[in-house]
Image 1 (tube, rainbow, N blue to C red):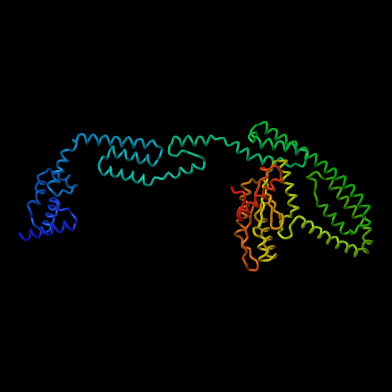
Image 2: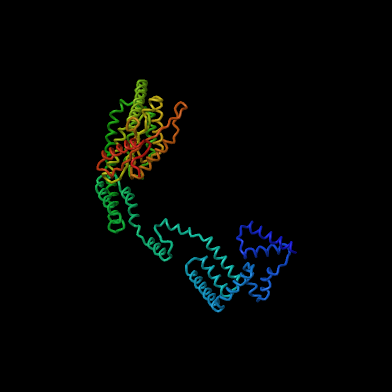
Amino acid sequence: MATTINEIIKESLESIKAEHLSLTPDNYAKVFCKVAKQKGVIVEDCQKVEKYVKKLDTTIIADMKRFNIGSVDELLAFLVAKLNRANEGDALKMVSALALLTKRVLQAITLLHDAKATNLANASLERLDFHQNLQSIELVKEKWFDFISNYDDSYLKKLDAFGHIAKDDLEMMVRDVLRLLNKDDSLEIYKGLVPLIVASLSPSIASGMNDELANIGHELRASPEALGTPAFQQEIKQLISKRITLDKEEVKKKVAALDKILDEINKKIVDLIQSSNLSHQQVKIIRADLQKIDFSQDGFESVHSKLLHIASSLENETRSLSEKMMSNQETITKLQSRITKLESALLVAKQEVKEDYLTHVATRRALSSELERVEDAFMRYKVDYTLCFIDIDHFKNVNDSYGHEAGDVILSTVGKILRKYIRQVDFAGRYGGEEFLVILPSTDLAQGIHFAEKIRNVIEQFKFLYKNERINVTISCGVAQRSQYASKEEVLNAADTLLYKAKECGRNQVMPIL
């Protein structure tokens, strides 16, 4: 037995050392009793806690199991704490008060206008009223934990599209929504309708109304909300009615003038028919084509009759001249061939005047004419436009490195890109050398910059190939809006100045920068 005790003592000391415990009486007693129990040795001092515990009430023993009591001192501390606790009456009152508070909080949740939270709060109240046990309380706790964990209020972000709305306060949120719903957007709607109305009223056939149209256009732009007034609506109706009346009168004048001209033509054709090269058969064809035309729906019956009379005159007169003209047919054929060639050459010449032979965009002369046209529309009807100057970066280096033929390929391709990406109402032309100008009607500065940026990006990404060699090409752009300057010369100079500013800032960019 002595040997066994010595072994327990030795092993206890080694265990204290191995576990890095302080060698105190309490630590030694705990480790000693633990080692003795492992070796199956019963030591009376180690059985004191169990001996005293057996004498306690079962409810206290059940409460002790929650604590790891291993010594008499710990047992005494537990019992003292047990005795010092508040009496059960106060504890019951506290539990009752907390239960009532929980019910009030749940009742408040049912008023917060959240369907899921309301349903869960009602279910929790039912359990607190009829199933008050630990398992039921735990179940309610788990349900609320799941609700908090999975709660998602991201749907409130959909309200951001309508403006600022306070989403952390339901009352404020409702006020903000009502404010937005009651907001009067009619002015914005009228502003959007004004250009459509001005465009629908102008231009008319009767040019005498241009000043009136310009005046009403100014009034609408200055006060778009006037569209909502009956007086202004009546004024527009009267203006439309007046325009229709003037247009009808103008058409009558033109028809009368046409009728007079046809009479003169008929007389002159009879006089000139002796030198005509038309055959009898050709006149028959003309007469047949004229008979197919039906002007009755447009009120041009008299014009139709005159044209048929002319054709009949041609047929009668040329019948007697057919044989005479046969002898001169060869000469006439040569003259016709020559006229055809001259007409073709004239058509090509006219086209060349308007279209650049290399890039197939407009020439500088055509650009000047188009600029005059959009400037007139701006001055008369306030139809704004934006100019976009485009210049190919380092174009001289391309010519020096690859030759002028490579430069021509790049110019031609840039022209093709511009023709592809401009709108039908836009106008692109070669201003000179490697410089292009694009006229963008009904376009503000931001939209013009967006267009220039798109063209710049397309050209930067485009694969320019010359003799199977890739040539990197970039452009610089300057953009200016007409309404921001006093004249078309100023807006043209402004766009040109911004182009050179883009080059000074490193090229391959658009100025101004939004």
